[in-house]
Image 1 (cartoon, one colour):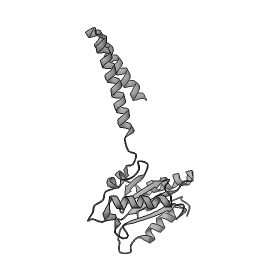
Image 2 (cartoon, one colour):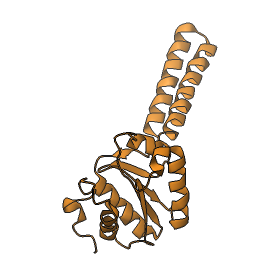
Image 3 (cartoon, one colour):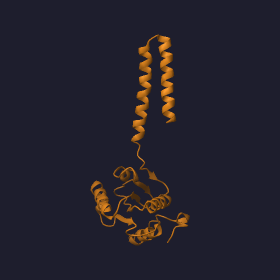
Image 4 (cartoon, one colour):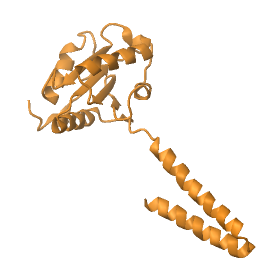
Length: 185
């Protein structure tokens, strides 16, 4: 709001200066209209900025999303896409194929937290991802769990993902350290 007021005020002042120097009210209105169009353009561009950004701290992202789902009483689907150097799917690629409110981060693969997505919605989401990225259709590439249907806690989700991980994968844990402290088990 403050930026809008500053831009409109600047356009009005510029319009008055141009109008007094040129003696033309048409020039005044043209400059003022240009300022208003600039406000509309910046507002429209801001409205299309995606909140779905790859996050560097997966443990914190998962902790926040589970807490949000628990507080709102809504389901949360967490998807782990296991890495394969051959196809090099990046978090940005997955993020572009998801809703703006979904959270994507990289850790030991690409993780996706899809809020307000239940078990039925999970099947559709996984299907869409495998259609969009055919390389993901290979066995054991995509693992999806839903809170609270599959597990009731963040720890439960993390343990379940670890149990579902292929034993030959030497990938580090997706969530480790103090980020788990204080969570009910």
